[in-house]
Amino acid sequence: KIDWAIIKYQGIQKVKRGEKITFLPFSSIYFPEEKWDLVFWDESGMVFMKKGLMNLKSFKFNPEVPDYLVYLIKNNQIKKEEVINEIEEKLHQNPDCKRAKKLWGQVLNLD
Image 1 (cartoon, rainbow, N blue to C red):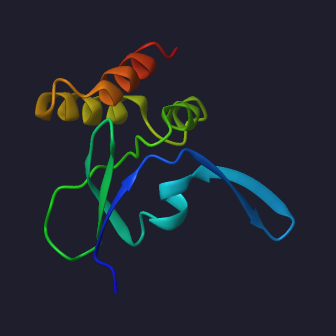
Image 2: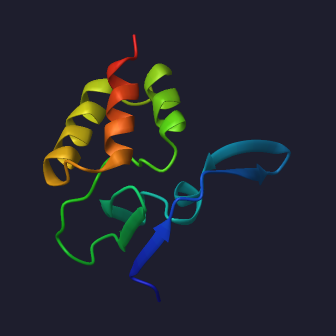
């Protein structure tokens, strides 16, 4: 019966599904996008809200593991331009966000 969660960044976690082992960001495992919206993030952590609880703008891309986000872009699982737009919006909201600045630099330098 939890509707909101504030979490700090945990990084990549090992997930075993049957015989297969994968690595995913902690928040993707415990707060899957089908059930949760990411409504805030900064350099310290993230705020998730249960889907449908309120009509708040949510972030499409999860900044928990920047290298994982870069991996998704490089493997054409998400679009670089959409990630750049979302990071720029975050920097407009909070120009001092170190995680957003770092991620923006990493994404812009992708070929």
